[in-house]
Image 1 (cartoon, helix red, strand yellow):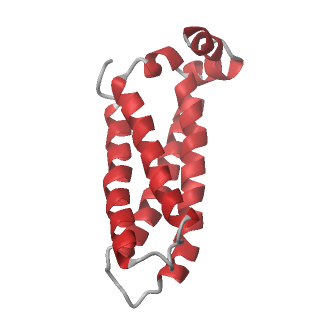
Image 2 (image 1 turned 120 degrees about the vertical axis):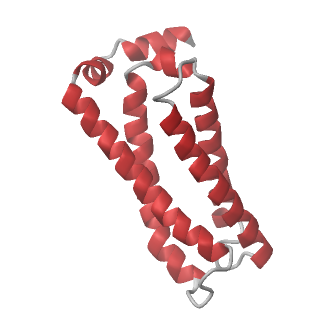
Length: 154
């Protein structure tokens, strides 16, 4: 594993991430934008799954917000991978970073289980409640873990 991390750190892209102050800042800003799109869209949809604003049809709300959330997730993941290149060995050694990755995996699994299973509009109210609650717990936890990475060592 260390050999892979070292080879990642030795790439030209990793060097650019380490040395380009404006490049790193731009990638970081895009990462924040991706997170904002993801969390903003997911929060509104999760609140609907929890029973708020029941006059808004789940199907239509999902059709509006899920593409925004997916775009935000893809942007956050792509830029997150670039940020990782700035210090692969350092990040891989941080338990908080590993926790963040595990939380992301759980949050994505929760969304996939709902959408690839019954789907938003066909899920029972209980299933919607469980999926919405888990999402409201997991995505902010991802956000907090990621933010805390800047303030903790190891």
